Length: 558
Ligand code: HAS
Image 1: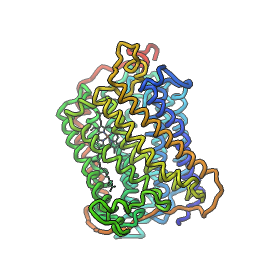
Image 2: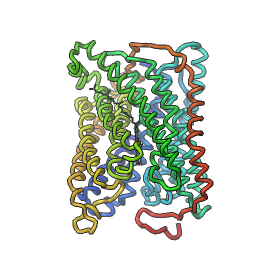
Image 3: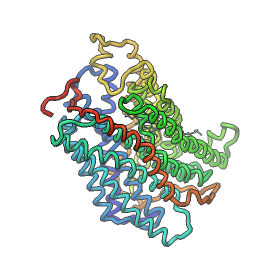
Image 4: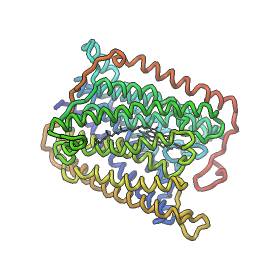
């Protein structure tokens, strides 16, 4: 058990609990999405919030706010645990407070209906300036935390020359280096294009430039989500199954590979976007296949690590060793969160490869297939790892034993059943052309509408059943986490992570030094993005006026 300075401990607890409280709103609007889309709700708004307001809250809270806070909190705990030194508490506090102020500033206009722009905030949908300033502060706060870890690492390096950087620390640095690269273009988008437009200083906005800058950020963003989960899979999961990490080198290579290839491929979100050269879209499609390689490698390495542990516990046979994994063991409850995420990710990963395949993308783009894909990635491995680890850290840092342990043990399985069911409905519907981001209860699933599509009733009803199961699971999780928080202290406060040794502890020079990989990452984005951005600049497209989600014509006076 490692002691954490009280002030740092408090800020980490805050960074974990604050977004979990917000998740109540985010999850509630997830359920409403299913109900609106299946036509169980046939109205523009519910409970005082309109459809796109709810969808914005769902995406911003679950995908942006919760994940960013968690990554910062996780890093704030990993640094003292693995490096034996604390980051500056002052910096950690300023970072946490900045992120919280940013979140509140972004939330107010969403709640008041002046920022229904979804988590991608694509123009020409326009938000109140407070939304853009809030999002910027959230990001800046997370940068501050990362910058605060660098001197700690430097001082550790000085005292430990020649020693390998702990794998988890390499993982968290890679996560935040990806974040640093990813957030630069979106900072430009927000500060140079969107904020002046929102403040009324410019009349129109260059939509294709804004969307390209967004996806320059948006795809590495997904690796910012998955990397902390990979840290847990490589460094902690093998310990939970009583085994060892099969290859330390593979873990390092996966992290560094993701650092280089997370960013230069965002055009795969824009295959259908006019104004961008299709040769560059194809180049980004190929680069996307390269970014899948470390995940495929992770699948084998993590499976081998689990097999090693299960066989050490007496597992036999080609698949018989699966029965020796700690599926429902109280002492290894985090295993359930990890294995469910991994199983979901098999399907999330395969469907990602479908998305990336240039021609197949035409079939699935902007359909319900996409939410199915990303619920099996971000709401699967990333979300399960994040909330599981949040609960672990909250329990440890507050010194409170986890309440309702059986409920906690069941939660990840029920959540995953919900994801499987809802995504199956969405995948089927997506292949039939069912659109995403659409209040279908008013149109396609309304028998009185000329747009009615009877064949979409079945998939959307399957999806809504999955959504209800997911909501039940989350009620269980909230019960566990809040009951734990409000219980009495029973243990010493501190932090302990289950850390696995390596079975093959290779030491190859190629993964020892991060600098060449950082240089390669910067070069890769320069090569992949200079031509498309130059093309946009050269084309001098006409700026677009602002729109509201409720109307297909420009909003006057905005
Ligand atoms: Fe994606 C769209 C392609 C990964 C999230 N993605 C999205 C969107 C989100 C998202 C949120 O190319 C929607 C954005 C929007 O709002 O428009 N994605 C990919 C590819 C991958 C991928 C190729 N995505 C992710 C991850 C995400 C995520 C990770 C979040 C965390 N995605 C796309 C494309 C689009 C897209 C296009 C745009 C489509 C469009 O038209 O708009 C790859 O990185 C996936 C590689 C993963 C694998 C799986 C490895 C499997 C593992 C599990 C092993 C299991 C074990 C258990 C060991 C190849 C590691 C064994 C069990 C035992 C019992 C032993």
